[in-house]
Length: 516
Image 1 (cartoon, rainbow, N blue to C red):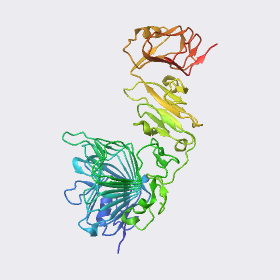
Image 2: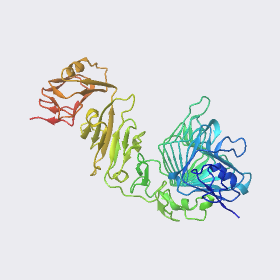
Image 3: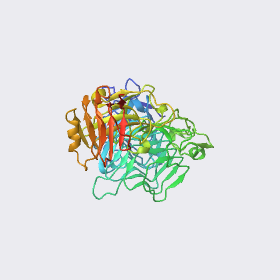
Image 4: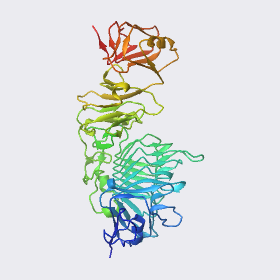
């Protein structure tokens, strides 16, 4: 007869028998050791970063090690509050089953993070044999090193992010005839990159089957999907060479499809690239983990999937009509945050957010990154048009933090953080001397002007942006603005202009006021 074993990291030690909550084991491994075939481990919320084992003697150290017995490990509070933490040379989970009787262990409702193994070791999150392990409603993040984050296993409604395989191997790897199977999962911002001599470039997925998954903004080397895998009802927005017999059905590989990758909002857009592109019959055929078999398959958010009909491709099946137009982030580095949440912008396709994905009261923060020269922040009503800025902020005046209302209307909006190759500070006495000293070969020059009254400004034939540090309230150009012959491009920002200004494509005005 099966029993429940209790585990609680708040207990002082592992001396309890684990048969009641008051006598719970402190470490997960002690709970596993106290359990028998078919038992359930009920795990209290907290951080589990103690205890370890090796299921075979040659797997290596694992925070949780199961050997030849089927268990169900379930958190009582869910993945957000229950963390299994590996460590240097410690993977999160190792499962070995010697035959079918020990197959089918389930891990439900955990965050697994910081698993780490040596370059040639298998599975920084999990190494399993014979289909021994299944993961349900789990988060996997910041696992690194090794040959694959997951080596075999079934994953259902799981989220993978920030994991790195650094020796040029696979992010996910099945060992035929076994496979890694991903159902209703999201893989976002993971990496399979080569850092060791003699290894091939990173491969993202090898011997993997996917159904109803969103795979987006991951980095890898030569191949993304490799060696006889299968994908159905998936939104696969990662470039690369697809090779070696992968089969695809009802998958989408182009176009904006979700509310906001940069804010990790995976709800599909009504009318977007993935809307209505999936077929529910594929989801109905999911080989769900043991504890979920016989139930109606659901998407990443728990919405039941119908047995037939067209649904959205990807991890979420119900499309949402977005309100308003998207906001784009166009800076060259991930230095912008919304309410403390870093905005991803590694590729232009991913750096957008519809208002539905933004907080109702949102606050932008621009970091001053070491080694980077921040020149200004812009909020524009059009993309790619330097003189369409409707709002600007200056480092000395606004300290890199500001709050704005949500964008309205149908025009595209753009939020930018500008950098420069060469940053110069000037005052009314030195500005023109600095402009005259610029060479034709200089480019991407930014001159930050202190408050004051400036005379005639003659702009040489270079690419230069001249920014008033505290805005037009305190900075005026009393003379004329002149553009030298052969000028490439110049921009004035944040000045009050009293004299004449040429109307020419080579000069853009931003946040400037005319004094009549």
